[in-house]
Image 1: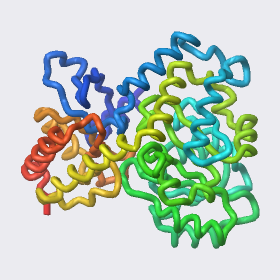
Image 2 (image 1 turned 60 degrees about the vertical axis):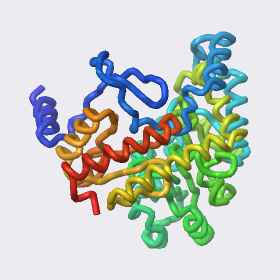
Image 3 (image 1 turned 135 degrees about the horizontal axis):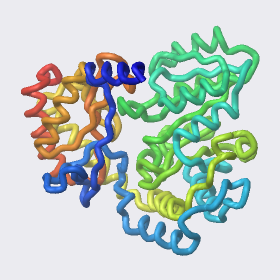
Length: 395
């Protein structure tokens, strides 16, 4: 089809065409390009496996035991015959982690947001979403048929203006992320909760990049900020800091019972398989029991950022484990990626439409897989490469 060919050609021309690049994951935060088996191993700065739990012996063993005991698949959707006792054990553990009465599992974070939002709001209702919310949130909003209003990123004053003008008489839902995936910044949840006291709305917080990392028990930013009781719906994933796969929605027992009957992405999907459940359950138990996992990560994140700042990097490196460096144009971001791969670093260029035009960036994820020695060497490489190819990011 000419239309498809033209579309692909335009993306190639502008440097925004996405392509798949298979890799083989190695030990200690390294990977190798699958089509280059003799190439050097690369340090992986693109993984969301923040706590390195995907390779933790306890997580692997729990997955192996569940696989051997219950098989490779659940066999059906949960409302059919796929509802395993292990699903309920994991949901109880997640509810405890998030300080909620109950939880419900979904096949992925995208499926959770795309299923929960349309179940809660519809025509005659209104949704207020941060402009930098994840694509799955916006797809859920579109599927719902509710009126959508986008507020400026982390701008609670703008949100209040929209609420005052467009709250209406139907249900209102406000959706934010506690840690934003492309900028690594943090939502002002306390201010948002104060606003909730003046306007009646449901509050959904996506904690995909916060669960396991923030809070005394790893319960996320809602725990760290002490606002869990005011958050009606806490969504998150197992595929990031928890090292496994799938997602959850935690809330009141009434909300969960309602979603079992209304969330189409839950009702009509085969249940998560036993091996994934076992791994996720072990990961939840680990983050609650072993604070050293978080402490080690944050110590490394802090030292990595300090080295970059001391080397003259002018970018705002943010408050989280996600370190974005904006470079502007997509071709420059791709050139930096290729240069860094030649020097042993696997980094992803994030380009439009994932981010706004002229804000292409390199997104560095710091994980426990990476040692202090790895991070120190990487900082030197980054500063040298930016100095030659993108001096504008240096002070």
